[in-house]
Structure formats: structure tokens, C-alpha cells
Length: 316
Image 1 (spheres, rainbow, N blue to C red):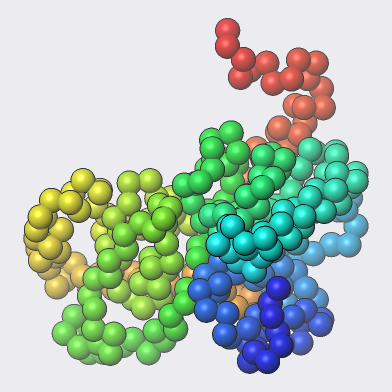
Image 2: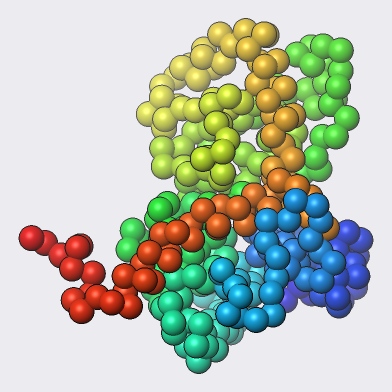
């Protein structure tokens, strides 16, 4: 599915125990490649300093089980337009995966609650999502998921992989007046779901994001306060003629510089790379997964002794 063929490959991913490198010419497929970078972080020699996840070979030692299924890449490769006959390949891969999982004693032991499945593309795993709704899902947002399948208390919101190059030499004497990337504010309207890659392109460009989305959820929000470097508007506010522009014009230079500095300080949290680095995007995601484990373990332990399945949620 990576289509290695004649593509130039990413040098940073070479030599990972034979794991295929991510191709440079993948275009917009890159924005949902989170699943690839999580997988490659578990390969021998891939974990750098500050690694939040260490692979073990004995399932009895594992705290969580990563399911290495590239659901976003599968959707983008097999029937991306959703009417192509090739989309049946995507469906069959999901059927095959479920067959493998259901034969696993570890899946059966927890009903999949301690398994991690990336579904970052809004249409990833679209045929059989309801069969893995107990697992910890890594998603871009919750725009196309019913609440009985994915929600913030169980699942992890992961950032898009930015598609613009990071701005690494952003130290002008007066950033407000002279930057090579001259935009001070970058508009981030919702895409066909509440989120889009535009936010993360803005962050690594150190351009203050202007977010227009009523239902967006953001990665790592228990650790990062987005209001320190972003501006938020409701759709209703954005539809008022002149309102947003008027608000932006009131932002003083001193406040903008504070937001710009904060962007520079946090942008490393949105970098996907090999080998991983402390508190980069991959390690931040693994840390978020660890935060979900107490609730997953509680559900597993309760389920083992309950005689009446989840009586607490029944109407009384």
C-alpha cells in the first residue's frame, strides 16, 4: 500500500529492521500517516530518548496491545472514492483482521479494551467499526463516530501529520514585522469533519491559528492550553460580516509575540520522526494512551465479575 516502486523514500525511516520507509511522494496521504509512525516507533532501534512505549514480546508483560493495521492507508489505497470496486479489498482486510483478533486470547480476555487501533482518517475502518468499539481508538476527531463507538473518555485524539515543512529558523529581531513566513494569522476552518490538517501546518509554521469549528477536539489538551497560542470562533461568529477581521485587528503586537513564542515552544509536540524524540508527537500519543488505561482496566476487571452486564447504565 505504500507503493514503494519508483518513489523516493524518506531517509529518516530507512534501516528500521526492514520496515518500509514512508514515501516522500505520498501527497495528502501523509496527513493521516499517524498509524505508520506509531508502528515504526515499536521497531527495534526506533525508540529514542524519552520513549513512552517499549515493545515487549511476551503478551503477559504487555500493558496494552497495538494493532498494526493501517486503516487510513487502506482506505486511501483501496477505493478512496467509496464507489470503486477496489473498496471491497478494504472491507476484506477488516474482516481478516477481526478474524485474527478474535483468535487471540488477549483480545478475548479483555474484549479488546486494552487494544489500540488507529483510525485517523474519518473513513478509516468504516465497514466494521462497531466490532471494535471497546478498543482504544486513535482518531482525528469524533465527527463521524456515534457516541457508543468513540468518545473522549475512552479514545485518543491524535494530531494530523503536517504536510508543510517545519519552520526551524524563526528568530528574526522583530517577528511581528519581518518573517520569511509573513502571515501572522492562519485560518483554520473545519474540514468535512470538525478538524483538518491546516491547524498543524499553522503550528509548525509558528502562525497563530484562527480556528472556526464548533465541535473540534484537540490533541494533548490535558497538557496543552491551546488558548495560549490560538484564537477560536464559532461558526455563527464567523458568518457575521466583518466580525472576525475586526477581532483580529484588535490583537496587539505584544500579545501576538507572546502567542508566537508559545507556538515555538510547543511545536515539537507535533513532529513525527524516526527515531522518536522526547515529547514528540509519537511519544505524546503513547502518553495519552497510557492515560486511558485505568478506565480500560476498570472495565475489564468489572466485566469479569459482573453477573448482570453493566447494570449501572440501565435505566432505574
